[in-house]
Length: 145
Image 1 (tube, rainbow, N blue to C red):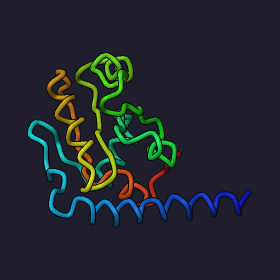
Image 2 (cartoon, rainbow, N blue to C red; image 1 turned 90 degrees about the vertical axis):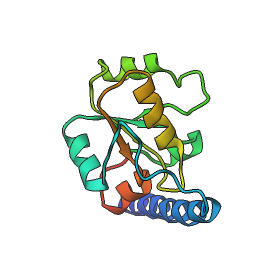
Image 3 (cartoon, rainbow, N blue to C red; image 1 turned 135 degrees about the horizontal axis):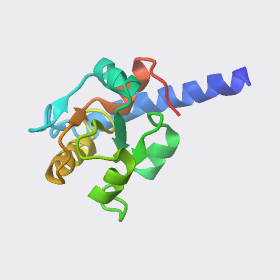
């Protein structure tokens, strides 16, 4: 059991490092925005505090990234899929003023910025943008599933 957990941590750490490295190379000239107008930008520590306080996390990453690991309790809602809509979010969070954190795979990933903008356009009022996303979440030792 201990060996299996160690292997899982190794695989997730390797995934985070490769995501950061290859994402940086792929998007070196076009990083995601530092902020999203209308959303509150948060660090990993602030995101964790929000998570501990019961904020809702929405993950727009690919299925492969989602299956590799995610923030516990997050809603997977990949952009371009039928599930990506305001009603799905409302069913998940319960009200348009609930705190919602959008995250993806660090500054090379634009999906969290797009999601934060969409949430605001859909009328959600308490939107947080976690630009550094899942790799930073892992780096800080925060829980994952």
